[in-house]
Length: 324
Image 1 (tube, rainbow, N blue to C red):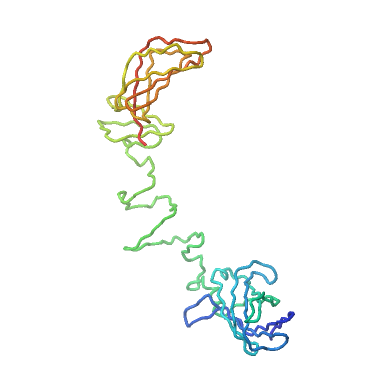
Image 2 (image 1 turned 120 degrees about the vertical axis):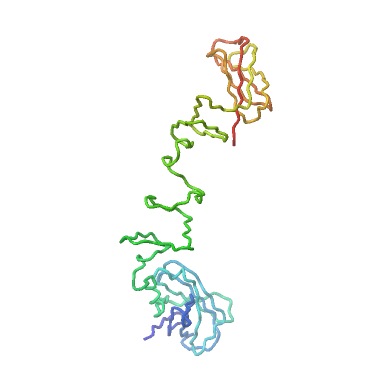
């Protein structure tokens, strides 16, 4: 039994609707649509332009794509076309509908829409595809898939045979309790628990005591809020230092004055430590490398009692390097 859809000028009778066009084994995403067109009640033999819009609903729905066929040969009203909207528009087993427009083949005007939309029904091959997620009559949950989260039960083992590679580019979550025969020389990244390290290996966090007669030739870089305490005969090599007397002029309240000190080897971005002979709460000293081999010391009068003339005092300037 055929359904006939009447409109102002054109009507369409669906004769055959095949979901896919198949070879013996290979399946493509194209399907064959065949129908019978009437024009003003007659079954024409002529050429027509046909436009096929794909939707998710019979009336409104979401527009998924369109295929236009120019100069389709219609013989006694019957035509056959091949349509291809790709596989992605048919991957959730929900209904799909065609809205068809028609105009004479020689026309470049607008299309006349034939109502109602035509539902796309499944062919036997497509029904088989719905069940294609079953292998050996087992559900997809019994197989390792890449498109969903899965949990394996039953104490089974996944074995990667000799000569094969398990390439994990994301995150591998495991407790490591049964991880054996691991060659640490092949580990190029990641973090090893501090408890697994020798007590004489510097770690990023925690307090450590280094024992034995060790000669630390490499750099230990302490960053953030960490600290490094050196005791005994251990040594930290400094860039250089200098001790000298500095006599700052009288400094008004809220003002400052600067003096320069030569420290050979000092470079921009080096750190400066100042050793002061006495503490005056109204005077604040800061030091920085202002040029190669030169440290500038600034004295700021932060008091509230007016100008202060600092006495001639001895300073020690220590420069140490940063590694970026």
